[in-house]
Structure formats: structure tokens, C-alpha cells
Image (tube, rainbow, N blue to C red; front, side):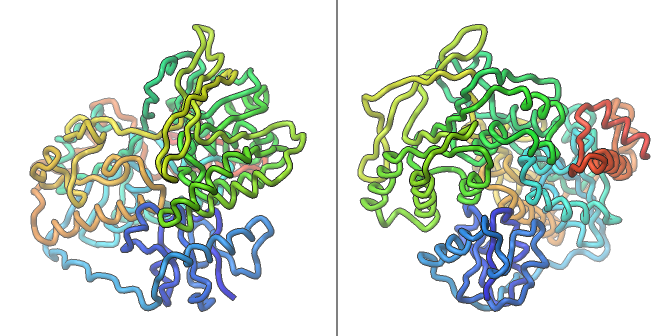
Length: 555
């Protein structure tokens, strides 16, 4: 018997560290880890010890004889990985950590409270000489795990248990509801802390660069996701869902999340932690068809195979995969066989299964349109009316080019889901071309290819761009923490010139209504109690006033 990794896999690699026979890949020290969709267990090497099951924070690992029917495809997905990845079993070796000064303490400020920030904090709080102060402008932590992970993916949110263990440490302090740049500057943090780690993410949408992009009803996926997840900045937004068709431009996991939320039965969503205002709107929605439009072919889909496969679990929804698109992908794969790996091949295989499945008369449906590029969004001041497009074709089995075939689709809304982009932060250098803070091994540089700024570090999407999920952010956060500790060990960090004890007084003078751990746990308790009363995971408080009130009453 072997163990199998299934859909909720978050790539945080905690299972890799405990595997005694090195049968889980890719590992963080393998180049492919940085772009991996998920991790895979080699069925030929697994010894059925079960250590990985105990370590997995999202319950994604299952013995192969205990798989539910909907998870059985992962038997093949795990095995397929090892068809073109030759790995050797053996004990995992970990480098020795640097020796820290016994006669000094280090106060570290972490700006941001998402996965990269927490994984960095997890490494830092293991050291008794280090104290971590975490800042976030919202009264609630966890970043995109709270405000980005789809509400129907509750298992993925299981990584919150890892973060909750970190926040309990005696050498960890929250400064939530505190905005760096408003209540305190980066320079003022540097005066008080030996190291400042910025992990603020990249929460702004990328542009399409086509006509009509700013029409009413042309929606950034970043805004829509934040709205249905109850982000306070978006709680007052409204979206027109009165038309039968919505087109989503883009084919990453966020695009599939939006498509799934739009067509899922609201009674099913009502059992999740989706924001109440979004649930009410979706109950009134007239949307019956969601078209997912992608410029390239199926094998280059930015979605993970697990997200693609999860569409089979939608009740009352037809998934329409045009046969000609699958034939094109299969032909291109045959022509460019050397460049098609097991992950890409699985995408084509799953698409073939969708195409071969008869389309029924379900009330709602998701339609895939690969090899299709939007050229304009058409409408007026009342909103979007249609989207114009051009068909693409393969060239030499790999690259694509536009054809002469054009068309248009009626649509009442267009969701732009072509990626995220970072924005400049006051007090930090910024690379406008890459939309990241320039860095080298997590150490901030004064300019791209410039000199490092002692004591300044960066992690997460704002460091490397919006690529990778929770797992890669773990690796990135741990890298940043190791850089901090290495510089501390080598006595290369600047000494604070102002006592950190002055922090609370400064924040209060700037009007910050600071939320500490007690305040956050009070918010958490209120939300979970409200959810428990109606059989839900939690009911989120979505306004700053509500959140601050709950935090204050708990404190």
C-alpha cells in the first residue's frame, strides 16, 4: 500500500521533511519545486509509514486503499509524475543552521500577515534570541488564506492551524489594524528593529490593454474574489449579475475559482464561509453560463490539474470542452513531444475526459474556449454588452499565432483574471519593470542590480512576482528568515536607535486602533460562534467597525 497526495495539497512541503525515504517530490531543493502544481508521492518508494499524514496541515494525504471515488484520479496523477522524473530515495539532509550570538537579542518587524510572512515568522520564533512583531493594516491576519482562498476550499484553509501555532509563541506580537506608511513609516520601523521584513504581497490586478477594459461590468478578478471572501475594502461593492453569460479572461486557479463560485448552487455555498453579502447576491444571480477564455492551448493552462479535476464535483453543472480544442492540443503534444511533461499531459488527458463526457441539460454550465484572445470589450455607460475575440492556432506544436477567424460573444460581465501586480511601497525601492522590490537572496537592494540595504528583507509575491501558491510562499518566507538569521549570526544587522517600547505610544498618537492577539482571537471567536449556530465554518465580519468592535469587546 502507498499513500497518495490529493487536491487540497498546499505545497508547503512539511510532509517532505518527515518522509524517511525521500519519496515525496519535488522537494524544496529541487528547481521544479518553485513551479510545481502540487507534490507527488512515488508509489514505488513509499513504505506506508504514515508520517506524512500526521504532518500535512490540509489533510491532503490518504492511503491508496482509503481513497474516496472522486479522489481516485490522483492514483494516476501521482504515478504519472514519476514517468518523466527520475528521483532517488534516501534520507533528506538539512544544512546546519548558523550559530546565533548568545549575548544579543534581535527584534524583527514583519510587514504583512499572509503565508510568506507567517512561514518566515515560524522560522524566526524558533530562536529564543529573536522577537517577532507582525504588522498588518487589517484587523485580521492570514492574508490571502482568509481573503483569497475560495470559500468552498475549506481544507486548503487548514494551513491556518500552522499560523495559529506561531501566533501563540511568547516571542511573537501582533500589531494588526496598523498600516505601515500611515501609522508608522518604514524608516520608523528601521529605527526600532534590527531587521524589517516586508511581505505585503501583490494585490493589484494586471491590465489587459484592450478597448473597453474600464466599462462598467468589466471586473478585476482581484476585486471579485475579495468581495465574495469578505475583505473589508470590498464589502460595499456591488456587481451586476443580471445577465445569463459571464466571460472570464484568463485560465489560472483564480479564474476557475470565480467560474465555480458563479455556477455553484447557493445552498451549497451557504455551508461555507463566503461573505453573506455575496451569498445574497448569488441567490439573485441570473448567470447560467460562464465562458473561460484562454489565449494558449489546454496544456499551457495556468490552473492546476487538481483545480481542473475539481470541476467534476460540481452538481448541476455541465463542463463543456469543445472537442476540436482537445484535438488541437493532442496534435500539438504529439508534434512537440519532448516539451510536454507529465503535468501538461495530464491537463490534456483530463480535457479529453471532459470532451468525451456527454453534455446534459444542467441548469448551469462552464464553457472552455482555449486558443482564443479577447480583442475588445464592447458596451456603453450602462455596462458590458459583448466581448470580441480572435482565434489562435499552434505554430510548430508549441507557440501560437492569431488566425483570421474573429467573433464575438454576448456577455453582461467580463472578469479579468490575468494575474496580480505589486505596487511601490513608501520607503522601499521598487523595480517598476518587474513590479517587485529589488532583492538578492531576500535582501533588499537599493535598485535592481544595486547594493543591498542592511536590515531590510523581502518575501512573497512582492519579492518574486505573483507566482506560486502557499507552498512556494513557505519556501520564500523560510529563505527570508534564514537570510535574517545569517546576517544576525554574522553581526551584519544595524543596531536600533529608538527603543521598540515606544511603538505603542507612537501608533496611538497616529490614530491606530491597534488589534493584538487577544483582539484577533475575540474576532475569531465571534465569527466561529456565529457560523456554528447555522452549521457554517464561520460567518465573517466584513466591516472595519464590526471587526474593531469585536476586537475591543474581547480585549
